[in-house]
Every structure is written in structure tokens, then in C-alpha cells.
Amino acid sequence: MSDQSKQNISELMDGELSRDCSRFLLKRMNHDVDFRRSWNHYHLLRSGLQQDQQAPLMSDLGARVVQRLQNEQLQPNNERNYRSNWLKAITGTAIAASVALVAVLSFNQNNPVINDSPMLASEFTKTSKQLINPPNASVARVEQTPRYSRYPDVTPQIQHYLLDQNTQQMVPVYYRVNYLQRPQNQLSAPQIRAYTEE
Amino acid sequence: MKQDDNHKMSEKNLDAELVEQAQKGHMPAFEMLVNRYQQRVANVIAKLVKDRSEIEDVAQEVFIKVFRALPRFRGDSSFYTWVYRIAINTAKNHLVAKSRRIQNTQVEYEEAENFSNNEDHRNLDTPDAVYARGELEQVMSKAISQLPEDLKTAIILREVDGLSYDEIAEEMGCPIGTVRSRIFRARDAIDQALRPLLDTENNRNEHVRSI
Image (cartoon, rainbow over all chains, first blue to last red):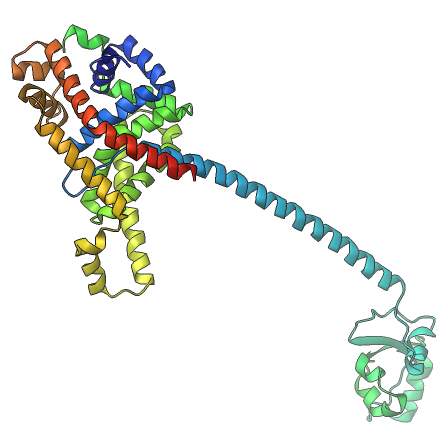
């Protein structure tokens, strides 16, 4: 690099170079490492002369900042790609799992589990008006003939009258499933009555 | 203002040109801007951050923020005024974050005070970096002291007192062309003295970057 070019750089940094020459030099400095090196060294001298006692001497901080910026520009892209790959994988798995769950549930609803217990079979499957009870329900609805015996104040005559007058032959009765699942001989009448809603 | 001043690219316009290029993504232009204001920013930070080993890190943080905020810089104030504000805020944030870190690690208050006041503990740079920086300062001081008196006066009036070439010419009683030449020759002489040291450092940095 000629001394004239170096002097131009010296004048440029002081704002003492003509506009045209400055623009030309700036373009040149964007591509020429030697020109930028002179710029940096002249500014290092400026740093040395302007340095406060408490501050360390700054030398070519620009190169380190640009290096860091270039590293950071690379990192977020990589991280974004990494995240999007994970998102795609997780989304795909979630959709597949949802479809499988829907398929299993709909299969179970169309094919209710039939218990081998004779009591349950008679209670749940043989009545034509019986409602379908979900397999995991805690309370089962079973239709039975109405009873008024749980009301001790009602005399037998009135009970018969009510039975005769009641056009509804079957009334819904709700049992707790765990009681229904016990052997039939353990299910005493008072217990059934206790869980009966009329 | 003399008529010739209208044809010059002032320092403010020079900054504007470099900012415009940096906004377009020309990293060499941004690198030149950073090196142009590195010491003034470090001096500002040093007024708040007393730990010398942290000042360069905070200065780097300042210029990273400056780069990210460049698209929003409209040139209403001078570039340095804008950078100055970012530097002050970054230094304050650094101190707040540091005090939180100290609280989180449950360091005793007295211990923290001793840490920040103790020169030996504060200097956490690697020995190589400290030595290189010290050597650079020594070589520069020696080179400045060995300059011919007219060159030394010209460069100090320019860099320390911030006088324009016209003002220096008036102060030294010489033509402005002589001032141009003296300032350049002073810079070149110190550049020649520092170049072996700086080239070694550049090579070392490039080697570290390539690892």
C-alpha cells in the first residue's frame, strides 16, 4: 500500500478527506484487508492516547465482535432446525396416538364387554329395554318393576293400589357396579333397596 | 467554517456512511465502526464497572446490541451519542445481573466488597492476554515518546485534545498540509513499531479461531 493511500486513511478517520475520495476509499476498505489493518492500527493508537486509567486498552475489538455475531447467526438457525425436527417428530407421534386411541374407544363402544357372571348377564343383557352401560361406569342402570315396600307408612292396600294404577311397568334402578359384581347370594334385598331410587 | 469544509466528509458523515454499509450487512464496515469507538465505549463502561477483566466483555455486549439495533438507528443523534446510551444501559444491566448472581451464590457482602476492591482477584484475564496487553501499551508508550517533537505535538493535539486540522495548524503556526503530513507520519511511525507485535497477535487469534 502506498504512503498516499495510508495518508488518505489517516485523513479519512479525522474527517479531513474530500467526499469523493472518502467514498472511494471506503469502498476499497470493504474489500482490502491491508487498508482495514491500517485503519485498525491507527485507531489503536487513538485508543492508547484516549485510554482512561481505569479502562483496559482495546485492541481490534471489532474482529472479536464480528466473529461472535457470525457464530450467533449460525447457532439460532441450527437450533431452529433442531427444534423443528423435534416438533415434527412429536406432532406425528401425537397424531398417530390420537388416531389409535379413537379407534380403540370406538371399538369398545360398539362391542361392550360381556361379563361371564350369570347375575350380570341377567341384569345387563337380557332385558329388552335395558340401556347400554359403559364398561367402566361406577353406577349401573337396570330396569325393574316398581316397589313401594321401602315406605313403611304406606299400607299394603295403598301399595297394591299404586301398583295397579302405575302404567309404567318398569322403572330404572341404579346399582353400584361393585355390588352387582359380588356373588348373588351376598346381595341381600335391604342392600339393593338401599341403592334403589324410585 | 471554511469553504473547503463543504467538500470534506465530516466524521459524522463518515459514521453515517459506515452505518449505512453495516445496515446493508457489510461486516467490514461494522468492524471499522467498532474499532473506531472501542476505547471510548470501554472508558464509559469503566466508570461503572470497576472490574477491568469484565470491561471488554461488556464492551463486546454493547456492540452486539448496537449491531442488532442498527436497523432502528435513524441518525437523529450522532452515532456515538446513540452508542453511548446503549453502553450506559448495558453496563448498568451488567451490574444488576452481577449483584443477583452474587446474591444467588450467597456470597457474604464483605466478601463481595473485598472481591471487587481487590486488584489481584479482579484481574481474571489469562496471563498471556495480560502480558500481551501490557506489552502493547509499553511499546506504544515508547514509540510515542520517541516521536520527533513536532509529530508528537500534532498527534496529541489531534487525538487527546480533539482539535481539527485547521485548529492544529493555527496552534502550531504551520500550513494545514504540514499538519496532515505530521499527523500521518506520527501514526505511521507508531504503526511500524507496533506491527510486529500486532501481526503476531493477529496470527495467534486467527489460529485460535481456526481451532
